[in-house]
Image (cartoon, rainbow, N blue to C red; front, side):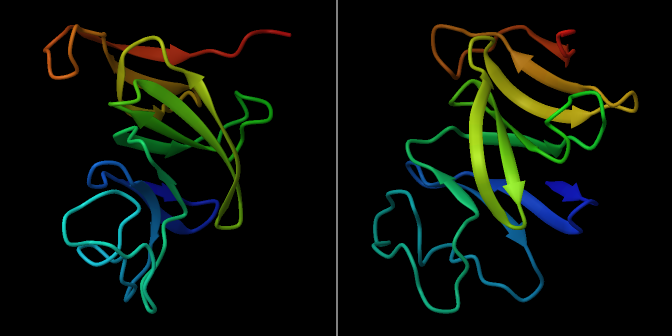
Length: 155
């Protein structure tokens, strides 16, 4: 879960059934449709929308298997302030999402070649840190990992 103090809302990643991974803003009293609607494929669920149920802010089909998320609130990354960063296990990537209000206006892969991204945080020094599980022959294989700090390139 990522608390966005700049936005005052709680954002969360969610694994969908056979795709349809979601990023949602969690609000009291809202119904997010689990078991009724899905952007993925699940036996018995054929609806993508339903009155009174919230659609995701963004979804991923095929799956990226979202993991940790964090908003970058520091000045360490010019142009990335208040962007949402999402780690991906299945997608083995770090994604950056530009947000306007409650909408994703642009997104990109920051990288996708270092293995599974388990978590992403903003450290007390303002830099982004990610925990990586190095690539294996199969996703379920146990492999060594590391913590990496993202340092901007001087221009």
